[in-house]
Image (tube, rainbow, N blue to C red):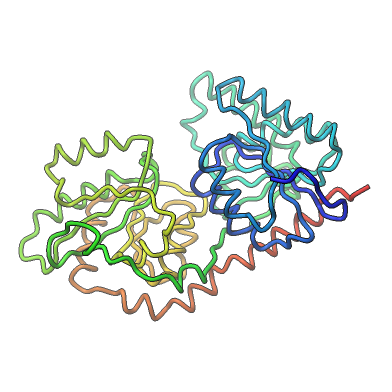
Length: 388
């Protein structure tokens, strides 16, 4: 990656501590709507595969990458030192865009001391349980102290904003610091993709009904409730098609989830799939996508599925309910395996995929990322430190 930057361009330092999942996709969708002749991106992030994927996704900008080693406390020190060094000695950073609360905390003080505008995008939600331990109370004290230093806090949904204000009430004293700009997607990528033919690629029973799950195996993603729903479905007689869950997930509690499936003797109903970069084709090959989350900020996956013409069953949890509102998605309560079971059974017996395909144009207009990118660019340009 080049280290030289055009002084007439605006240099944005992108500060990421965990470049995975929604953060990676956000960078791809939003930044690719910026003009390469007006903006340079300098990434400060861990030197891992996910970061390389982001850099590849943004190759039109030829972004500069400053790697750090991800090793506990040393990792935090490196972030602070590298950020300060870059800003002090290069003197060419016009704005810092941090992703996630931990990244925002780490660069709040350096950004304030060096008088560099700081935009923080919050991609996560908080819970009261996080702050009950001694360590949790210390973290809340840090949030209370440092978040007001951020110039602008970008919330990806109104639910996400209310969640942060509820857990860090001091932020209510700074109404001008908050902006809500929803997430969006590259609709063309999902409308033009070809569907995967899973019946050829996988050893599946005849007349399969393919149920998709995509995401990390964390408790808040609600995978266990989908497993319980499949257990109920397995007891149904005279099903017209054989239900199979294709689980595109990784990490966290995947082994525990797999053990739970084995214990319930449901192995034949699940296939754990390897990572795929072609999410659009995978989605199009499904009969339905289930999003059983307990909480979200503003998930991209249901947007992608609907734009791909795939029916969505999702919960009414915070963040997700905001995405599903006014769409053809089937909305159910969170933590309700019976509701998931009934929704899947209804879709299996009365498929709505053709109806979903007929609504692609409407949902594409709703979720097109170009609108969101313009709104974020306006905020960035208002904040931008001018070139000297």
